[in-house]
Image 1: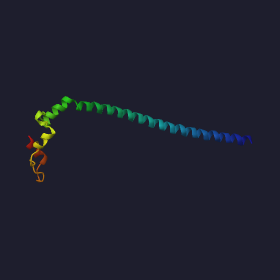
Image 2 (image 1 turned 180 degrees about the vertical axis):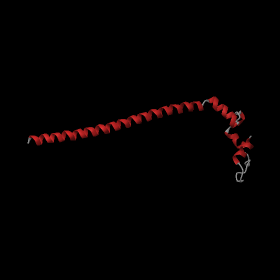
Image 3 (image 1 turned 60 degrees about the vertical axis):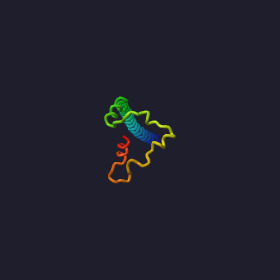
Length: 116
């Protein structure tokens, strides 16, 4: 009887050792996964910081001013461009300066040229 009880205890110890080992193995796998996730988060935070710095560099007012002067050829706003609501009807042309229905033409470009 005592031998059967001892055998059951040995089997129980072996089963608990197996369960404990498998739990430890799965916990270490989860810890590695958490470590990889934390590393990926740190990399993404660093990338976000670099992108924010690059964005700050790209939207500097003096850079935008230089690029707009170089590529857009914009003119400064003149006081004549501001009109009162009752003067607006007199400033609208009777007929559009460019026919939008014509094929093969840049209608918006032609309107902008006519406005210059």
